Each structure stands twice: as structure tokens, then as C-alpha cells.
Image 1 (cartoon, helix red, strand yellow):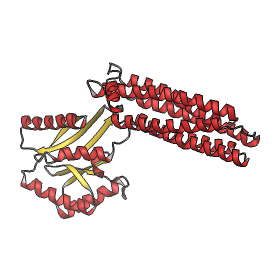
Image 2 (cartoon, rainbow, N blue to C red; image 1 turned 180 degrees about the vertical axis):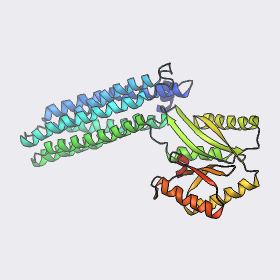
Image 3 (cartoon, rainbow, N blue to C red; image 1 turned 60 degrees about the horizontal axis):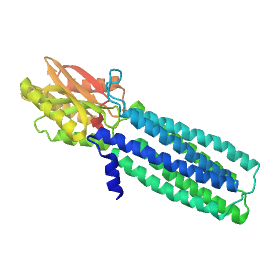
Length: 383
């Protein structure tokens, strides 16, 4: 029944429109449910005089503000590209996530101060069965809310909704802790409410810092996952008629706006029409199978030239001793040119490595001029 309702609410003609509808639906559900939780927890907190319950209530008010920002974020992200923003507005979703994170930290700091005052000047709680019932109801609602957010996040691959799902699960732990501390203080008389509120405040601040890190990573542009790189590599490996590929660079302008460039090595005996047809097919596959706008750069390789091929094999053997990969190999007159893919933490400097490789080439191949480009950006080096 839920799936039928969900499909009706989010039915759309394309992926971008569906993403917007799922995001807006999630924001509305979060806004209503968090406002309801704020009201019942505030009532419970005022009835009992518990700073930890009031802190938890204000946390839900902050979640309500987060839901409003989520709504605006998804609406802004759905705007089409324009003259000033040729890659669209999908990164607006990351900005909304950053603002949500700042709100979470602010709420945590405010109630850390209130909890400290409660520790220094404790006041007894005035709990009742109604207070405990309200807390239990709020825990159940947060569990359902977390499951809903998680389903929506998986549906559209949204970090913002995934953060909201994790925040809901965190709130389950928080409210459970509040409930337990209230029960302990009611049964034993130990005045631990301020300590519970302080721990909750620290937990809220920590979760906000983690969320800020995730949002900043998205805004700065983080590397694609190994799974995504593997999918691209597997797709390229299906083309048996290419010699090789390298220098994969990926740029994300939002969850549905991914651009990439790559160098494709081909037999230099091919004519331009054949080579152009090949890269058209590769770019088309990336677009339809992976949703990636790919641009290919052609690198002709002299695989039919026996002299160059012999030198290529000798260079490959030399670089194998250094545990290095290379590409863009060329022999021009009396010059050997190639790029080396460097590891993340090379043991030698570029100059020292160049001198050692050049010396081995002179000893084993001949007195060729050696030109090397050191490549650190190729995402394929770890796959």
C-alpha cells in the first residue's frame, strides 16, 4: 500500500523530476513529523522540568528547520541550467546539507550550556506516566521516520536524505537515553538529568561536525567511489579494439550531473572516421549505461611498427622493476616519450626517479633522449 502511494506521489517523466518529487515529499514528511515530535517532547519536558527532554525537543525543532531547508534545496537543485550556471543547480542540495549541519551544531552548543547549568544547579524532576508514554511514542515515530528517509535516500541516491536518515536514528538513541535517565532519576532520586543532557548535546555537536565534513567534500568535489570507477573500467574493457586507456578524470556537478574525460589509445594506422566512430560509441555507452557525460581524447599508438614495439617492451620491463605503470608511449626520431602513473606516496622525488629510469634506458636500449610526464591524477591507478 505504501509503495502504491509512493509511486503515485513521485510519478515523473524523467529521473531529474522524480528526484525533485522524492526530495520534496521527504522534506514535507520530515517537517510535519518533526514539528509533531517537538510539540509532544516540549510538553513532556515542561511537565517534568527535565532539561534533557527539552533539549531533545529543541533538537526536533532543529530537524524541522532542516526539513524546510531540504525542501528549498531540492527545489533549487531542480532548476534547469542557465547562462550563469551552465552545469545546472544540483549542487544546491549540498548547500542545504551544509546549512542543516550548522543548525545541528548550533542547537547542540546551546543545550550544552543549559545542561551545564542543570548540573551546577540541579532541580528535581516531576515525571508522570504521561511523560514516559510521550517519550515512547516519539521513539516509535523516529524509527519510522528513519526508515522512510533511508528508503527515499536509496531511491534517489541522496546524501542529504541519507544524513537525515542517520540523524533520525541518532534521535532514537538520544530519546531512549533521555527516557532511561528520567526513569533512573524517578526511581532512585539520582539527579542525572543535566549529565544526560550534556551527553546528548555533545552527541548532537559531533553528528553536526560529521555532516559538515560530508557536505564540504561534496561541494569541493570528491573523488568517485571505487565502485563507480570499476563500472567505468568494466565498460571500457568491453572494447577489444582499443589498445588501452588512461587519465580518467571525473567531475560531479550534482547527483545527476557527472562529467568525465579519458584518453583512449588506438592503433595509429586507423583512419579518422573509424577512430571517431569508436569514441562516439564509447561516449554513448557512458551516457546511457552510467549517466556520465564522457569526452574522449584519442592517443594513436604505433603498434604496427616493430622497432617502436621492441623499445616499448624494453621500457615496460624497466618500469616493472619500479612497479610503475605508463601510457602515451611514443618514439620520435631519437627521443622516447611516455607518461608514468605515480602512486599516492612515491618513495623517490620526480627528479631522482627520472634519473634512475633514464640511466637504465641508456644502459639497456641506447642513447635516446628521454622525456617523461609524471601523472598523479589518473583515477584508474587504484583499480
